[in-house]
Amino acid sequence: MTTLTTIKSHIQNDLQEVDKIINDTFNTTKNQTLTDIYTHLLNVKGKQIRASIIILISKMTTPDNNKSYLKLAAGIELIHLASLIHDDIIDNATIRRNQPTVHTKFNTNNGIISGVHCYALALKLISSIGDPHTISIISLAVIDLCEGESEQVNNRHNFNLTIENYWDIIQKKTSALFKAACESAAHLSKLTPSDAHHLATYGQILGSIFQLSDDYLDIFDTTNNLSKKIMQDLATGDISLPILLASKQSQSSDTSSIKDTLKSNGKTISTAIKNELNKEKELAFKELDQVSSELSTEHLKSILTIISDRVDH
Image (cartoon, rainbow, N blue to C red; front, side, top):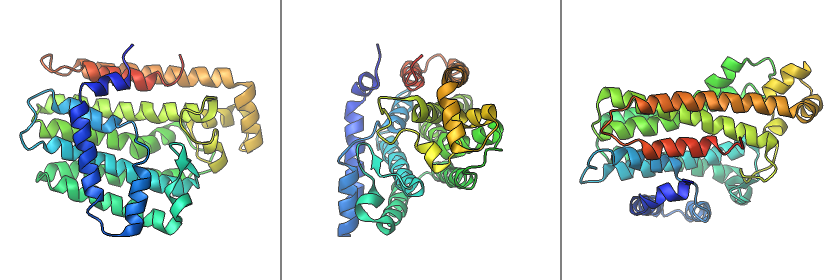
């Protein structure tokens, strides 16, 4: 069985270089509070999924000598990290990756400042690649990310939200950065417009799968794979697809009624989410199948399966 660890073992040297770039970037600040925050964040390493995808796409052809794809991978990871800092403030979350969130440990003001600072470090790093189109791709993704987060926050407890509204929000708040990672990596690797398009669409769908599986695990996971409180979305009022389906079935916007429906009719709702995940997975595979045959997409397909299978089938 292929695991994320197995895939990463093939690109371990590149991932180590990405880690070094991130460390070096954080070390450019002389502010002690920010230094302490970044040290805290680096205590626990994330999955590096976006960085891995960028490296794998870059290795479809001969990677450039100046290794700009590594700067891109590090920059995307920094943007993701910045978004997590701000997400935790918005959600008033106390735990991330089994340790206190930044705003819990260092206070909210420092959390806000460090998030913005981290975004700025990321964009400075990516701009050093010297490719305006790459900056444009990433900047548009950050715009989408912020707009998606705004739409989610301003639709909390809005149980009249449609399923189409839900997909629009996650396309922006989660899928946009996955898509940008794939699109910018394909661009820097000078892949054909057709291949770049299919890889970007794959990234977009992968982001949707990632978010939908997160939404599923928030409700139905009993092993705490997300390393955060179970049913956090219901507590904050964020309208995930399982919650939306439960609200429509119970014909209620009352949290207690929705929770009861999730328990009493959980199997039906769980099956509906799994079916949706399978449909998205098939679409992503179709995109990869349309990439030029001389380019290996084996590892990208494995990542797709690994993320989809976080939800027990």
